[in-house]
Amino acid sequence: MSTTTSPAPSAAAGGTGLTFSGVLRSEWIKFRSLRSTQLLLLFTFVAVVGVGTIAAFLRGTIIHQLMKFGAERPGAVGGHTLTMDQAISAAGAQGINIYGTPIAGLQLGILVLGALAVLLISSEFGTGMIRSTMTAVPKRLPTFLAKAIVLVVVSYVLTLLAAFATFLISIPILHSYGISMSLGLDGVVYSIFMGGVYVAGVALMGLSLGTLIRSSAGGVIVLVALFFLLEIATSLLGLVPGDFWKYVGQYVPSVAGGRMLEIGDKAAFISPLSGGLIFLGWIVLVTVPAVISLKTRDV
Amino acid sequence: MIEAVNLAKHYGSKTAVDGVTFTVRPGMVTGFLGPNGAGKSTTMRMIVGLDKPSAGSVTVNGKPYVKHHDPLHQVGALLDAKAVHTSRSAYNHLLAMAATHNIATSRVNEVIDMTGLAAVAKKKAGGFSLGMGQRLGIASALLGDPQTLILDEPVNGLDPEGVLWVRNLARHLAGQGKTVFLSSHLMSEMSQTADHLIVIGRGRIIADAPIAEILAGSQQAKVRVRTAEATRLGELLSGTGVQVQSNETETLEVTGVDSRRIAQVALENQVLVYELTPLATSLEDAYFDLTKDSVEYHSQELDDAAPAGALEGTLK
Ligand SMILES: Nc1ncnc2c1ncn2[C@@H]1O[C@H](COP(=O)(O)OP(=O)(O)OP(=O)(O)O)[C@@H](O)[C@H]1O
Ligand SMILES: [Mg+2]
Image 1: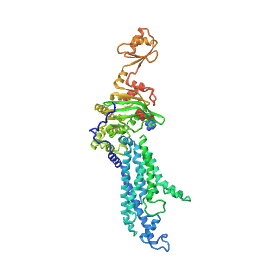
Image 2: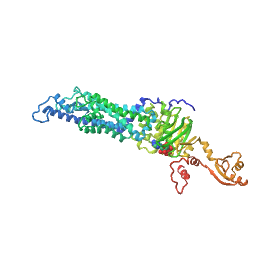
Image 3: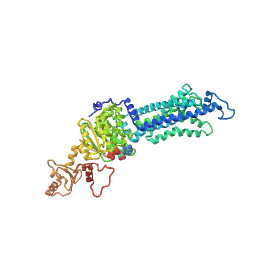
Image 4: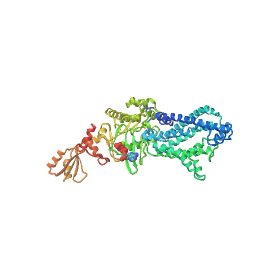
């Protein structure tokens, strides 16, 4: 008896013991080995590119109208033609940014990848898999970190690829409206590279919500509430006279996160940088309790 | 080696495990026996750190499980047949588990072959039968070739061949000097597998003894004698191989002589005897006797079958 020294890893099983790179590999194997995950990723790519393509047509039409008929109502008498640059900034003033075309489908991306992130852990609680996972990694946090890394990398890369694909597709579409789309256009490169940051952030929040709530339905509902309903609610409240609610509306996760993606000047209280910081604040707000809950609650 | 000291777990006002202290030693199979809801699974979950003890502590191979750097090599645990993602194949499940400890793919294939899962390894675990799920759970427990094996009702749902296989596996691993701890509700199952028994009821340890001792204790029939002259009859009966105990006035518990012999001695010596009851005559009886006060969920007895008989019937 007494304090026996732990026996060395057995020869039959081999292995080096628990390492973080091992946990990361394990989470990657889990991620890629679910058919539903593969399908959702494919769906996300197609949907984001699809919506972006439609957006390219719509934005092309609007800017084309502006170039033809001027800043007044399309077709209004007395309108005068604008140059492409003038038309683009006139449209931008109305919130229709040509440079944002590559990530026009992002709302769909955050919805699907956010839900996927919730499910990445809530399905483990639902099926009982979490007990196998936590027996192999009893310190628990490495698993959370590994899942977060897998999610961040996958969401970022997928969004980047989808944004770039949309960009390529939008070139001939916009060209047909007489607009030249290129990486040189102010904000295009930025939006292509930043879209994934936003989606990765949403995925992190999804993972935290799934960890905290442990139920797939509950986690997805809260995520949708945070990213869609909250914005709708505050924009309705924005109709209340006075600036207070308009101000509050800038702080909801979807608006603050969305501001990160826009370099153009839009009627807004916060800059892209502060938008990003507020968004980061939201991520911390759900991740900290999630991590504490995972570490302390029974599984 | 598993060492629990005053280990307790409360779920709200419900006490699942009530301050148990026990040691599970290497080189033998230790059975963990108790009726439904006795606290077996809860105790096992606490051993591998899934549930935090409300009080007390438990160590595995000298350390709390969470402190080990190679948990899967220390302990292999089958806690619940349902600890698997239903949409993932058995092979990928084991591959993911193995990856955490950098265990080679060849070992994954090895445990798949050992547990007879080769034919279904690439199928979704959600479609597995109870027994197949159990085999997958055992396969993941064996993955790290652990020093200590914890199996919660391992034969649950297995076919006779599977039951025999688990029994031989447990004996084989114990023979290699490993610690084997397995739970069951069934005394008969334990009597064929275990060297040592820990019996738990309502979260408390009722018995903790080598199985040989429990067998000896129950095979040597004990007889309860109520008599007007307990001391005198006790002296008359005592002799080699006879044990006489007196816990209550006018009551003796006698082992080593049968009821007929006791009655004869009493008659010859004109001692008044008003009760002669044989006690704990079989292993199942011993178990019922041990746990009768701690069974929480009683089932209704069938009209035309004695409960012990009915149980025997289903076991054999
Ligand atoms: N997560 C939980 N929340 C609340 N009560 C629980 C929880 N887990 C177990 N219990 C209760 O604790 C008691 C012990 O349960 P446990 O599962 O450990 O028993 P067991 O000996 O494994 O029973 P069985 O033989 O039926 O598997 C039971 O009364 C059970 O209802
Ligand atoms: Mg149980």
